Length: 92
Image (cartoon, rainbow, N blue to C red):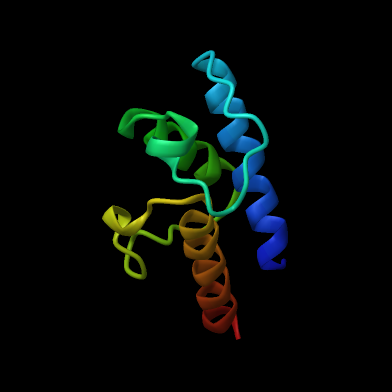
């Protein structure tokens, strides 16, 4: 899995959650901030992370990345990519 694939999934899920909240952030881009740019709240972030947990078998927030450091789409995609890399290293 590549970082771009994870980024695409994060954007897709973010758009779904934004639409559930009747938000229209337009085209969601990697550097957009969840709260300031997309208009989501911290509870919405929890929903995004729950949906990502259903997609991926690893948790970047267990040991690798502090959840409080996540501000942008890029941050979240990077956290999942980092967890994927760590998971691959542990599988070897």
